[in-house]
Length: 411
Image 1 (cartoon, helix red, strand yellow):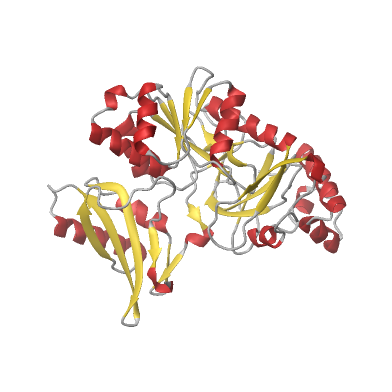
Image 2 (cartoon, rainbow, N blue to C red; image 1 turned 180 degrees about the vertical axis):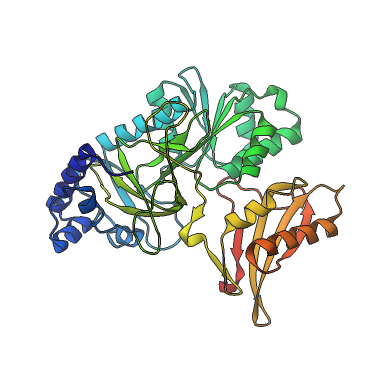
């Protein structure tokens, strides 16, 4: 998927703004002697921007528009390192709202829906992004924010919410609570818009089945507006990305070179019209692929596959590179277990140990199941983990993102 002439013109406009503002990327371009790009090949020679650049620009080194035009800042929800501060102009906020409205419309959500918003409000882009799009759509926003499950369910029943917006972890927790309390017949949910963390097919199926709803996978990151830059349609053949606002590349994370459409790699995003903090060739570290061809829905927007993980998700255990998604794929082959799991990595007696905790009901032979899972995992990753089978509901549930990999080697 090559950059078009009209997208190149927008990139050049952003390059001029970055150089004029003397922001971190403007300085990078000046040092490289670049003032414009004329071809796709020129564009692919532009330097990448990285999270480290954004942290180094703290607090307001990313600000590219005049300060009097900045109406809001957001910050990434990461828990490590210096935070990243992203300034927004009014146009940025409006553009983000339009993209989010498009996401809702793509999911078949209308102004007659009642949208219960459970992601967090505050410095991060979650709750306020879902609300901004909801108001642009003209639907009724129920801005709950995270937590207080009793209140969430009370409002869900009494206000007859038709759409739930949440992380997959919290959607599962709510689904299990609804089942436990026997109130499914009082719930009027039809759709769920789920974002913020990677989730397995097994988890998706579990939430959809327990709640009896259609699920839509929304994509976004704080550095690039926030959630709402892409979503899957009713055909569920990947997430449409709004390429009138963004240009998306997939690169080989090692070489930094573009890979052919259909091949997996790291998502790199360029913002085409962002004013407050435009980013050019921003390495997201998210792993996916561009899906070639047209979607059956007829929309012309390019599609990316489900996010497979992150380049920094990789665990090195016993000298072997392991991704959580590999373990998830194996666990998905066992219908006896729930979608919840936890991986714990320890270093004992001079060697690494990986323990995988899974849940099942009491009617299953725990020992036999543990052995079968361990064998399957070994055939996939090359060494045998310790598999611990526990009762359903024992593993922790989260109202935000669930920590499924705990590396105790560095504690």
